[in-house]
Structures are given as structure tokens and as C-alpha cells.
Amino acid sequence: MPGTILGTLKPEIQKETGSSAIPVVAVAAHDTASAIASVPATGRNWAYISSGTWSLMGIESDQPLISEEIQNLNFTNEGGVEGTTRFLKNIMGLWLLQECRRSWSSERNYSWPEMVDMSLKAHPFKCLIDPDAREFLNPGDMPAAIEAFCVKTSQPVPENHGEIIRTIFESLALKYRATLDSIRAVSPVEIEKIHIIGGGANNELLCQYTSNATNLPVYAGPAEATAIGNIMLQAKALGVVSSLEEIRRMVFGSFETKIFKPQNSDNWNIQYQRFKSFCDKY
Image 1 (cartoon, one colour):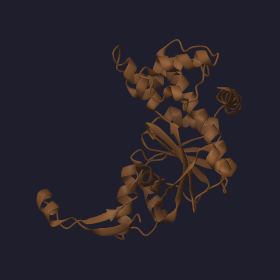
Image 2 (tube, helix red, strand yellow):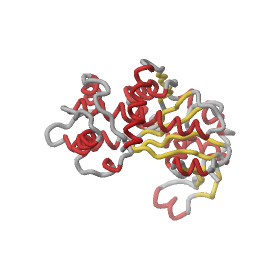
Image 3 (cartoon, one colour):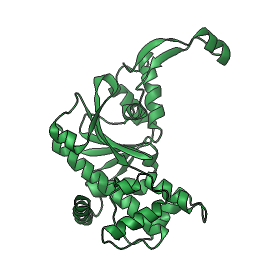
Image 4 (cartoon, helix red, strand yellow):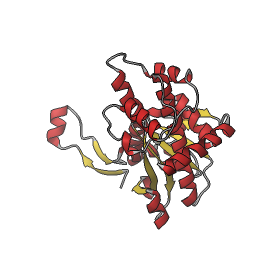
């Protein structure tokens, strides 16, 4: 189980690395499991988004959630810390933007802040995509795939890089809303806030859009959640901290958490209905 001391480094490894007899600890071995262990939350009335190339969105549960409805919604139950279950769904994440940046690199190598600034100059909600559509798994030319999706769904086609970037950010936020609705349909607890951890926590625009789309406060950080959760499970094994709750209190007090409150929710609700309608159709 996570937090179990398995032994110490073998003598030959100690010799090779110049290390002492360091304890070897079983941590929350999956990167997402370690990340969720470091969510600076209290209670259970929250959802998480581990945001990076992929987005993993879900809740922490005391037991697996299993039903035919859950199977149809394509959620999974994965082992967590202290006997908890990570009930979650994989969502396409910033892979969409990473691939666009790669396609554009021959003409210009945009920085991440540049891409955010470009998106802010684009018209809002001009077009939307389903981030999980098969067309976006590995298209080779992501901007072309996004344009083709817009044509297929009878939407205006993005005319510049800023419009493509804004389409990605808005569509991801609306996909998070759709996933939240699915979680709420089967969750035994009410969801009152969302914690975004991982590299995507640094993207303040996406965090704000997520708050707008879900009409919930978003708490962003820490960005290095996987490494922090790994370290803190080692600390628990060595008796430095005593529980998952104490780990989360320590993380909250040690790393900055930015809070985003919903804005312009009425318009986001209208766009969500539009998003759902073409996702259902196509």
C-alpha cells in the first residue's frame, strides 16, 4: 500500500550512487495518484482536474462507484492513497494546443504567454470542438483537423492562430462542464469547487474559463503536484506526517493556490447548450 517502507537501497546501489541505506517507500505509484494525494483540499465536496497533456477529471471516493450508468459514461475507478478510490475520466487536454504549437513552429515558435494573449484578441465562441473527438487523437496537423471539424459541424472556420487557440481553451472548459455534469449524476456527494493541479494550473485563462463554464470556484495549484504527492507519501512512511489530511494541510500552507470565481456565467450556460447539441449530434 502507498506509504509502506519496503526496505533500504541494496548495498551495490549504495556503493554505485554514494548513498547511505536510504529507505525505499511504496508511494502512490501512478503519477495521477501521487498528484491527487497533494490536492490542497478539505472534506470531499470537490472535484479535481489533473491538467497537462491529458486532463484527468474526477472525485475522490471511499469506495469504487460501479453501475451500468457509470460504465456507459466511461468512468474508471483507480486505487488512491489510504484506501481511497480515484473515480475519474480521461479527457483530451493541452495536447491540442501542444500539437498546434508544433505545427506552427516552422513559421514561428510561440511562447505559452504569447498564445494566451493571441486568444484574448479573438472573437469569443466563434467555433467549438469536442476535444475528445477521434479526429484529434493524432492527426499530424492539429490546426487542419480543428478546421475540418468546424466544417463538418457547420460552424465558421477559425481564420487565424488566435481563433484556433481560443477555440481550444473554450472547448476544453465546456468539456470539463460536461464531465462535471456526468460526475454529479452518479456522485454521492455534492461538488462545490474544483481543484486544478499539474502544469495546467499555470494557465490562468483556462482556469478562469473552467470556473466560468462550471459556475464553480476553481483553486489552481500546485503545478508540481505529482512530485509533491510522491515526496509527502515518503514523509508519511517515515512518520513526519500522520495522514492524508495532514499532507493536504501542509501542501496548502506551503504552495500558492490561486482562486478563480465564475464570471459571465449566463453566456457560458448558453454556449454550453450549443456545445452539448453538436457533441450529441456528431
